[in-house]
Image (cartoon, rainbow, N blue to C red; front, side, top):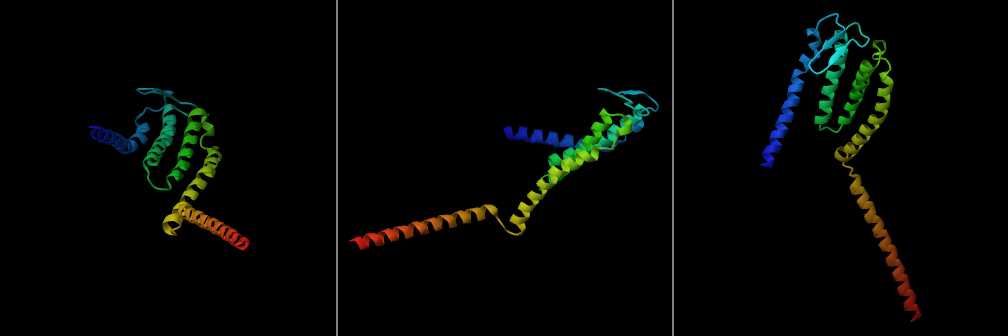
Length: 180
């Protein structure tokens, strides 16, 4: 019974994600179906004002050109199973900062200084992706398994310690044999 609920829940979630991806072009171009020269658009759950733009339609256009790609990138990031999926964080950060500037700031400052924030995110994400890649390349392409190498080194150290202990015991045995 639990397996059926799990499968049903997964199908519902995947269906909603698929529906959102399929409807993304319609959502993206939905600003075209709003009226021109209005100060605010009253939608079902909220109201969109002009927010410093020429009219509410222009503001909605700016919001949608940030929200739709951001949503698609987040879906891609969450559903991706490749080793490099952390690199998707860079465009996610870019669209996030741009969306924040569109919502929070005046319309003259849109898409200008976000590159500095994205550079900061890139400085964190790129080394992480590089080190993941290096570990995978070393293990799967070159056949270098760092854990196996560590284990072999530990075994060699233990063998060396045992050899030294054996030499000490042999020396003690020789000194005892000489005393007798």
